[in-house]
Amino acid sequence: MDIKTVGVEPFRCEISASVEQKLSHGVYLTFTVTNLTEHKLQLLSWYTPFEGFLSDLFIIKDHVGELLVYNGMMVKRSSPSIEDYLVFSAKDKVEITLDLTQAYSITPGEYTVQLAPKNWHYLHHEVSLTNQCSTNQLSIKVSK
Amino acid sequence: MKVFLRCIMILVTAVSLHVSAAKPQLDVQVNVANMANGDVNATLTITNNGNGQQKILGWYTDLDEEHIFKIMRDGVEVEFFGPHYKRHAPVEKDFIKLKSGESLSQTFELTSLYDMSEAGNYEVAYDVTSFHLFSNKGQQKKAEKLQSNAAYIYLEGFESKGTTANKGKPGGGTSSDCIGGTCFTGRCSAGQKTELISALGAADQIANSSVSYLNAHSANNTSSRYDTWFGNATSARYNTAVAHFDAINDAIDTKPITFDCSCKKSYFAYVYPNQPYKVYMCNAFWSANELGTDSRAGTIIHELSHFNAVAGTDDVVYGQSGAQSLANSDPDQALNNADSHEYFAENTPNQN
Ligand SMILES: [Zn+2]
Image 1 (tube, rainbow over the protein chains, first blue to last red):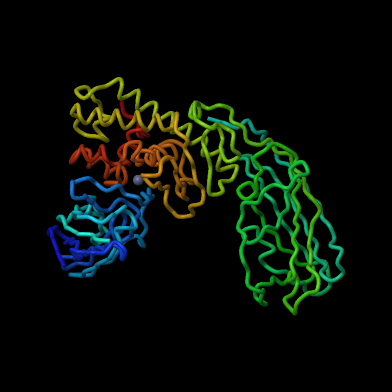
Image 2: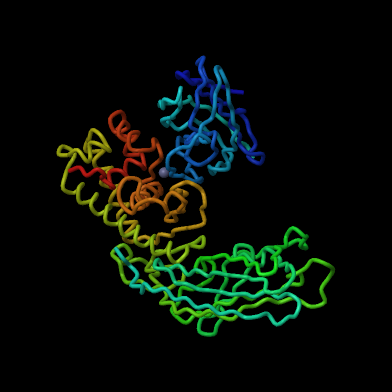
């Protein structure tokens, strides 16, 4: 496992994946968010991997640096309701694993992957705050 | 902007028929009404006129479950777009029980499920046949039937009256699912089609105003409208804004846009950026105003900007305050953010 981390208050975001993966099995990436604070925080799941592919979540480049086209949907929403927030108790860690082949046309080859930078919204004692949660690059070798 | 010169008339016809079969004394009535927005509503009323309790298989009382209406246009049966389910044998709980004198009544919108796009005289009747219509006890020897007499309605059909948003598009008005080059999938009702054509006209209007603004200004001569949504202008950034709005405007004026009405989620809308020019409209779109902040027109601008063939924007932040701070903190990302384009085009509250 190759894990790259960028610490950002109040959350830490990590992406991890097996370096060598088989296309026929799917290309999996695990996204982990840790609440670094001693408080309960609620993270808006919109535009994060926690809601799956409802936006272009990752920057994936092939071996010549060409960006892969996102094949999934992009959803415009109205205002969030409480069910759209993910609850993190103090020091809590939540992870999700996604199959990148569901949203990107991956063929055998070498890729670099990183989380697309987005502003994330979270609630602390009902106060809405924003934060950028970005990760470093990860390399994945995909074989047939 | 009104596209349809449809008469605003409400026609109501009621016909009832006593079912000839001796056993189920169910009386079926169909009323048909042409609504102001172009929808056609059919109200089905089934009454138990017998002395005892009567049963009827529930899915034959619901247009969302079964093809319960037979609709003819000038004597020719029209196509039904609704679902055809493969059913299990009915069990007791699938039957609706009506006490003596009791009736059930429900209204269904017809134009989203039947092809009622052509002008003509339409005849609508409840007409179902099933081996288990009234009972699940044993195998019936003969199929049971329940019918109403026909209700009649004249519809003017959909014809393009030539809007600026539809000029010069390929295939204008030739298919029954298209109106002047704008097409519909996912069972849009007649009323929804009218509202979409109108919203596209409003989107055209705000796209034109955006292009005019950008033509009248330049990188070293912006004003509060540009600065609020896209921040500090360099000539490269300004040219990006110009290219994006030219492409959005071009898509509205010349590309075959398809609207899909099947989404029932709370979203405004969604697209697949690599599948131009199909836009899926969801619940929040239908409750939005035509113009103004987060309006129908603005939503269309937002969604068109996502197509890789148009401006290839992302959703970097959402909402007005998020877009405003993005313009200050990262003008390059503002030009990559769909909401920033939407709010610039909506220009609400108005800025010069
Ligand atoms: Zn969007």
